[in-house]
Image (tube, rainbow, N blue to C red):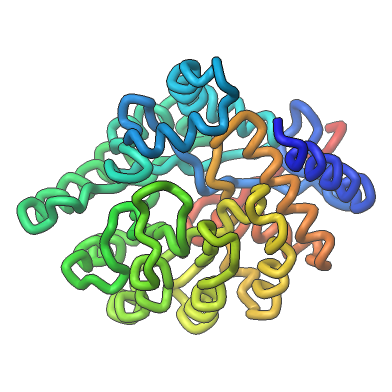
Length: 347
């Protein structure tokens, strides 16, 4: 473990002890100022080593000490199963989470709709699936891909759609793909879009693939579609809030646009987290923010992301009620699910 990770962990623990925040083993929710708040993590990934492209494998194994790199494939296959994802949520006190499908063979890999369905089936009351589709041969099979995605939503009871323009290498304003938004609008199925950049090799980082401003035409054309702007435009490649104001602006002006803060509680974002949270509050979009982590990534990541994010909200002055909405209630409202009610401590 890097020294900077250890140092950051100590800082977070110190901050939590001052603010009255805690996660207790075996209990759901986070205790904040004497209240227990439910948490839904709407941004989780599954996948397999064999479906991970070579350049991404190299990046992942770069984090592993020499002599142990051969274990990465075994580790990944075990960490990203439905059972292990559920264990990760339990460890963090998170009640439920959404697991994304994705077809991104050139960058982050492939997690098919069927594979995601198998993982969420281990706990259908706590894990929810998001469907996706391939776009790399769109001119030949676009209509068929749309049909298969819609079929997967019906077959597996998936609650959302996931696309990642930078990873899948198509522009946010490319009208050829508006059929995806038509399905989201017609079915009332929210769609999650990766916005901002990514450090993954092969990902497009030019503004038309990253800046949510390029999505505005689609937002206006499909008012019945719920757009969740993943990462809130965070420029992870440069560790900057390059496109966050664009995301906040759309969420402020359009009732069908929401935000998600995946990776902004991670170590890479520690220098911008407070700024991000202050921009969210100043923009008046607290009711538009749905918590997500972009996990599991590595053991302990989902929990440490939540710890850092909650500590950040407390440090910049969010109220308990505002945190309650962000951590779970906004998701429940947007996705039409009952609010999670936790048992009182000691009951």
